[in-house]
Amino acid sequence: MMQHSQITSQGAPPMPVPSIEMQQLARAFFTEAQRDLDDAKVLQSAKRKPAAMTSCQHAAEKALKTIYILAQNRRPPMTHIMLDEIDKVFPNFQKNILRQRLTRWVLYLEQIVPSKRWGKNPEYPYYDTPVGPVRLPSKTFTSHEAKACISATERLLAKVRRFCNDRIKVRV
Image (cartoon, rainbow, N blue to C red; front, side, top):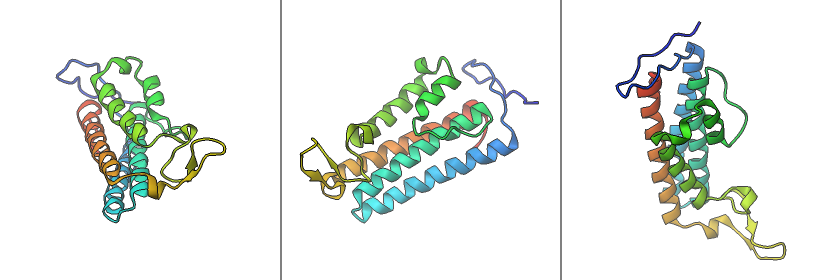
């Protein structure tokens, strides 16, 4: 049987306290998200911009899975589109200021590093048209873009940590 956490000072309804197993899993995901962010910083300083940006994407995904695990008290789905999954967990989350802030940073990352379906990804060579020139990520992305990804990821992880600690009452 799940217990409920305390009501926050903002008067939000209590959230169920996740099982110890799920708390450990969530902490593991958040630890790996922080590790991915650290890797991004090392890669960026080594001028491996595409790899740094890919590490930022991985960190963002794992951070959002941390929220999902704690809120749902179960393992996360095998998907990369975690904002959609979180919206299912929190029906009113679309209107929530945290959702707006998370969306802001996730969308910022996606704008810098569009997903594969848009034809551009820091992991793979890409092309603009079926007969267009092949572009290499290592020659395309700039240091400014890599730094912007790292900054956005730092903000995203800070917001997720605050949400888990304050709203779900689980320290990550």
